[in-house]
Length: 409
Figure 1 (cartoon, one colour):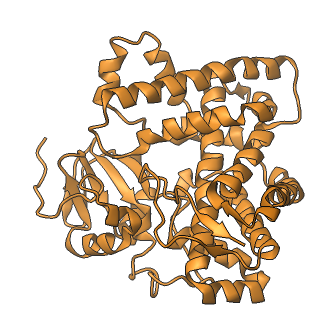
Figure 2 (figure 1 turned 135 degrees about the vertical axis):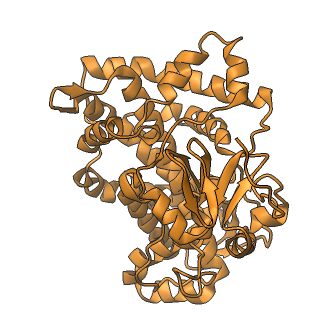
Figure 3 (figure 1 turned 90 degrees about the vertical axis):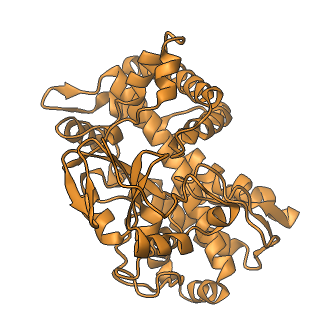
């Protein structure tokens, strides 16, 4: 299958420190010069305009699917457990299309309810305050390490029923597994082996936990997933474990970045911070703006189910398509003055949680945690300020957030 060559390089492959620090000027150029860019090295289309990203997210002709890696095919010949591992990882609703997606999402929805999230508000506030209590007398902290990461990690671990002593394991597994989200196809065989091993260890950890909940139900999310049933359908073991992994990783990685990116944006835009502190009722629109301004999720992958023309390019059936969420959220055709942080922005239809049938199931929880975390931080630490000019952004690019944030208060 042939694809057009392009004079514009793929910034996800030929990435620079400047691009990682601020990818939005590069995306602005792509929207103008190559809004639907074929990446020969990555073997995918990179789509950057809001209208195209939004339309593809809502188009069932573009399907989900676990990513194929040539390294996985190579490793599967020498690692006997590889096939089982990939079956478990691919059984979550994020990697499924209707009708399986419809069935899985419906069952998980029965456990992951708005009522459950609303009941968590008071406890999330307690966790936020306890984390700040631990550093209050120090006068400084690494905001990511001491607050942004542990808050959502504790919340989702408690919701799932993961023992506190095991949280550090999940941090390590999650960090390793999400490395596979990097679009660069030239990931080293050794790195891919580490990713597979982390998957295997996580699955091996969850198997007995799920088996225990089948015998002895508790008031946690895994028990609710075990109990979920509709029209005689229940989640299989692979589906249970795969969706638990999805909730665990998605439930803290993205929210960690939302809190970190949002706080960083406020610290770099003092007039917006002052406006929020003066009017806490702006908190809801502020969090929506943080999600748009520097999205925790930068890329969403789809597979073309048929030949289709977009942006003057013909995308062939079976082609991989990377949707640039960050670029779409900065498209001036959709958002006025998109590179400006505006916590009063109205009609903020960002695509940070996706769109259509795969719209993020945990969006309400993420927004709730973001609102509580940032409001508690500003209230408790009114003199909060950055202690560094340069902020390193962690990899993979798909999940955007600071690696660390040195602050004083």
